[in-house]
Amino acid sequence: MQIRARSSFGGIPAEEHKIIAGSTGFPLGTFPVRYLGMPLMSGKLSKTDCQVLVEKITTRIRGWNSKSLSYDGRIQLISSVISSVLQYWMSVFLLPQSVLKGFEAICNMFLWGVVNNGTRAKALVAWEYVVALKAERVVLE
Image (cartoon, rainbow, N blue to C red; front, side, top):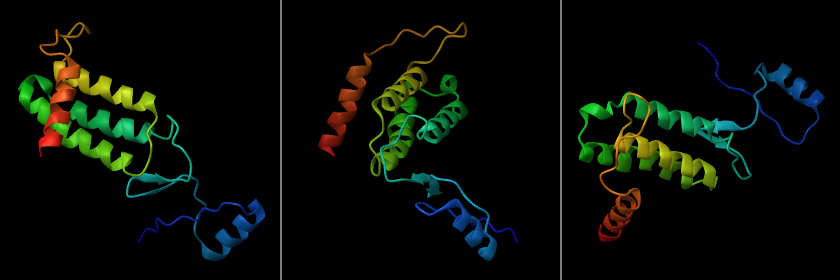
């Protein structure tokens, strides 16, 4: 049986960390500690703190083949899966504006697709219209 527990301390000297870790047998952990996939911290999140979230969402989007999905299917994945993950994090933290803009860009590229040479495909509808439609649906529901 492998023990996954770690000891993390704040506000006490390093010598006491070692004494406590030696008596309990747990290795020392580092902050921020993760619980249910989220960092436990008492401050504002920085862009580097959100890197786990960025990697999680980009991994999910890369796993979906946008060429085999219809436009409506891509919208459904963005509005259900990606929005749910973001809402889960935003229910606890205020995410930095740069991180939110990055997610918008990632979702935009997934929705409209990227041509093989790296250029974007031409958008059929303005992104602001898609966001407005989603906000309108939320109000109606």
